[in-house]
Amino acid sequence: EGGAIPAPPVPPVPAAPAGIPPGLAVPTIPAPIPPVVLPPPVVTPATNAIIPAEEYLATLTSPVSTIKIATPSEDYPQWKLLQQTLEFAEVDVSSTTLKDLKQLLYQNLEKKMPMNKMQLKCRKRGVFLKNDGDLLSAYNIGGERKEGKDEGEPVLDLVPKMRGKRR
Image (cartoon, rainbow, N blue to C red; front, side, top):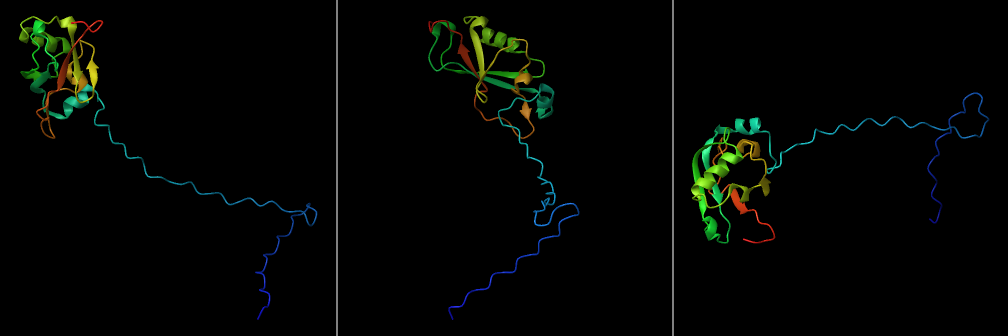
């Protein structure tokens, strides 16, 4: 009772190699650490990422579909924009350009809204379609997808170009 607890034994100090004075510490080199092998990262494409047109077309059962375009929520009677959704059937997204789609809009709006005042915005991605010469497939718009059809929501929003917020 009340006795001291014996200290654990100390491992012996290795003998110094030849040429090193006794009592001098010998540096030890730790064993190399094996590299950590991590599993490859799981890359999941963002649902809003635009893929190249060829890849997009490969995901479609048919490049032909109905394109829906929603007009602005406020009325623009001078341009026949009356808060409606316009549908264009049998549009081939592999050969229809943005300019072609604007031409269809122009005809449908009884030539009231100038094509240079039309901006189309992709509702899913929130980006404007800028190059009139681009195919719709370049923006991954339209076509009947192999996984199932898109919802009944309009694909594009028509946003009039305005300078100084005037109408």
